[in-house]
Image (cartoon, rainbow, N blue to C red; front, side, top):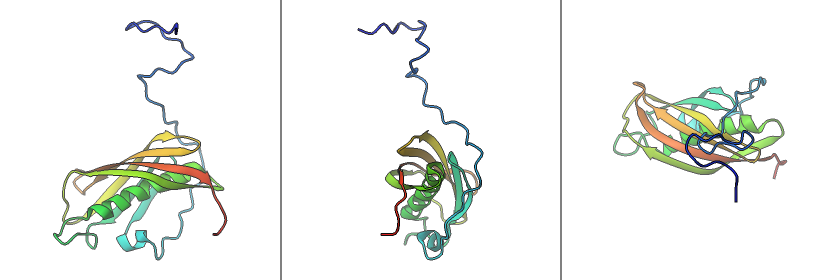
Length: 164
């Protein structure tokens, strides 16, 4: 039997975490700017994704709607999902640090609004930065700052291996 108080308003053991308080995401340590990999010939180049900023706790990137539409003239959900995974993966790679890498484990995305033109912006915000996993919430907005999609990405952080 636990001696942890359960009555509302009762004092808590200061050593035990409060289940009502989410895990904090600590501020980013002062690190040198991460070196972005060359995106020549990659999906990022084909989709026109431009990374604006990267840190372990947040990444922002933009993507044009033009060239990324489905046959009905709307922004393709797969292109939006690729943008969401890109910002989360770049932030997770920054979190992993030198000599380590991050790869996507799970992506879940919901599309809320259609877009036919302009540029969309994705912002990944860390919700968990651990030794072996990093999770991000991603919000994708249009030029009027209206949410068009929201996503959740979990990445596996692992030791980088040499060429296969």
